[in-house]
Image (cartoon, rainbow, N blue to C red; front, top):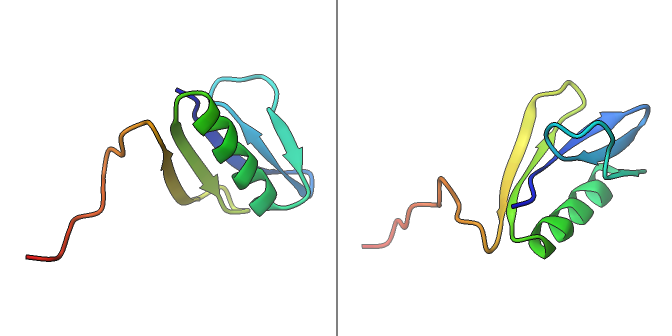
Length: 78
């Protein structure tokens, strides 16, 4: 599995795996970093992509296939 965190870095955005000493990539926008991290995650067996806001708080979490979502949406239809 390939998990990534999208965090701000010096006015840009980085995609970094947990425990890594260096970012996998640095991008001009948060959207670019998020899209690339999702692609990398899918190519490497899926995983979680966690996007942080500028203040460091988690903004969103996305599970990339084929990994299983630990908290899938509940079906509201009967």
